[in-house]
Amino acid sequence: MENSSYLPLFLACLQGYLLGSIPWGLLIGFLNHVDIRTKGSKNIGSTNVTRILGGGWGKICFVLDFLKGYLGVFLGGWIASQLGCSALSLAKLLGGGFAILGHIYPLWLKFKGGKGVATGGGAALGLAFWPVVLGLLLWIFLEIRTGVVAIASIAAAIAVLFFSLLFQLAGWESIGWPVVALIAAMVAIIIYRHKENIQRLLEGKENSFKRKKPAASPRKGQ
View: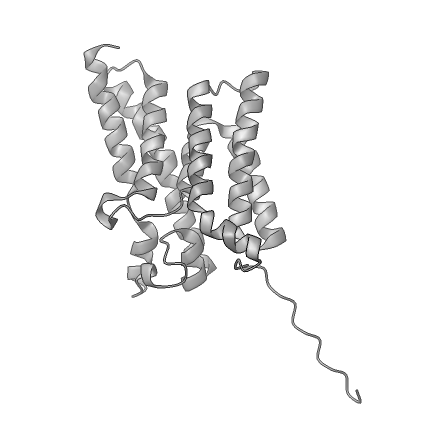
């Protein structure tokens, strides 16, 4: 690789990390006069925002975190192309990867960020479109079915890795093995970051957003 290629790649990493480290959940909390780090699970991700501030703010947080990953990939490639770097795929990969790292380990929050699901999904979408679409559909189904975000997130992440491997091996989409490796690393991080959720699931104590049916009122005369 030529020395002139290192600067674009460094800038791709830098912009990805800076984008990823924008703590949208925390900022949304401040907008509502709440420090989201002191409430609920104390996480700055969209799930805790939903738990504390409601579904509307949670969806906004999810979309903003998702865009961090997607823009990290897009801008990484754009910077490389503008500076005449031929390694566009590597620049996109680095931009997306560092956006995920920025979200999970933001420097200005003492490296205590979110769990990487939304930002990782956005980065993966920019690198492996159809596997992520299929994983997102699974996430929606499981979230509606179970109401447990941790189950939906972990299963969807594993599904994205599975479909990425399948598409790469079958030649259905030109994903590339470096992207598959990034997605595998992302899945490992997501599972690790959900270790407490997994423990609560095993104990049957994990929170669910699924609405419980109201108990039937007793009939008169009973």
